[in-house]
Image (cartoon, rainbow, N blue to C red; front, side):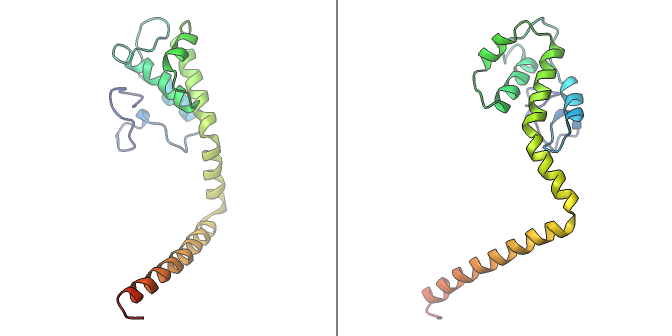
Length: 145
């Protein structure tokens, strides 16, 4: 859910860039966004999506990044944390989880357009080969071959 409004989906079309994490965001950008995410003034951490949607959203994001679904257990483990520590842990988890994607993206961008053109050309060759096999079957089915 959105970092700025946890009742709304996180969306790349949201005009508020602080509402979402991009796959290419670096750790500092992720921290800046998570740090400003909506929570509440209640002490401690608990998982209560209805009454504490901001905190629940951060717990859920962390859980999903860790491939866990035990939101209540995570919140219980963190019940004595303050919001800053919660946000720091979530931010670090996101940054680490997205690191391989970000590194691969950066590698591809360094390779430049030549690399992307090569990949596109390879894909075009495979697509033409597949299309030709399909057209052979179509012509045969229509009695044209």
